[in-house]
Image (cartoon, rainbow, N blue to C red; front, side):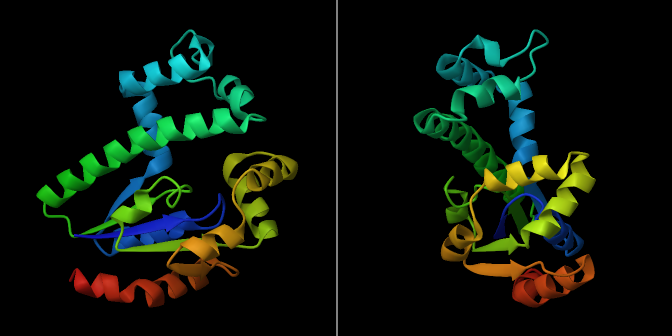
Length: 200
């Protein structure tokens, strides 16, 4: 089974590349979506979050209060490291479990979509890691259209994530998403073609 890791900041175009991988018969593991699922189903994760940040981070209906959690880690680097360690641990376990299950099912190509692919250690599970990068103005436009937020809010999200230099340093390959979707798909096809072929 071939595992391809996709990373890069929000609004850069990872979803487009992941969709292309699925069109080539691959399975997709979206770490953001998996985290949301674990918050609802994994009691151990919820207990560890409460132990570190207090019961108030969950609302009365049991949903994570993301603003309350953010207030703990926004200006506290050690708290953010603690949060990341907890999240990476549980997502890592779940990704490994799902990869084992997909392999058992005979799936031959898998894409992992994760902003924190490298620092979480998930990149070590991948045959290759690809960073999808795009100019900030294009990312702001995509994020505002996708999430219904203001440009200033989109810029804050971008500034809170790692810059391009980090991804260029640690990802094995880079896809420059500086055009339209068709152009990105063409670039991704050219970069990842050998992985499609190995799975035919």
